[in-house]
Length: 238
Image (tube, rainbow, N blue to C red; front, side):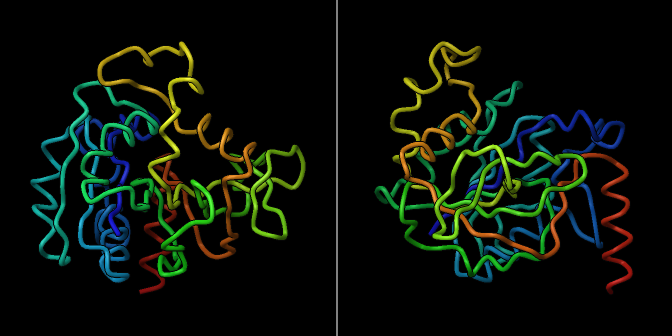
């Protein structure tokens, strides 16, 4: 199974830290945020990882190399000076993720930290997407999707959980992306730029998305203050 780590964002809310360092390369607990993911992916037998890059892209191969220190082979999917957003980034990386057919792959946001056990992820999701959901953090109290008792996701308005940024996807999720996205800004560019959320909502409406609830630690490292709190917590745990 292959994996994609989203690392192309501009990190605007993290400035001035991201003026000189891409957000996934900022350190917490003595190592870059992205390194925590690479360790977890290697531990469950993933051997090929695609990292999409844009802002300060050259720093990623300088910091991570070819991935051999983790027993991985890292491919870099450069998106140019303007990030392609999550959907466009995944679409752009598909040739690297699906070079051996139509197999599912893992995708994880490079700017989160969690103690979630990646071995719980299904190798063959029931639908086109399987999302790890977490309790709503203070900065996102409304949540994203409802997780039903049978594991299906629903787009209801109450008792929603927050999407953690960890999921397993089938390439089929993107097959009809243009009709779902329509004429949204960036969708006509080459390569196209578009968010993943509308595709997830479409899969949920079609009954093609499942999920699970992770009740453990999870941090969306979106501000310098959250990064500092995470770093202090990991230092205390050591």
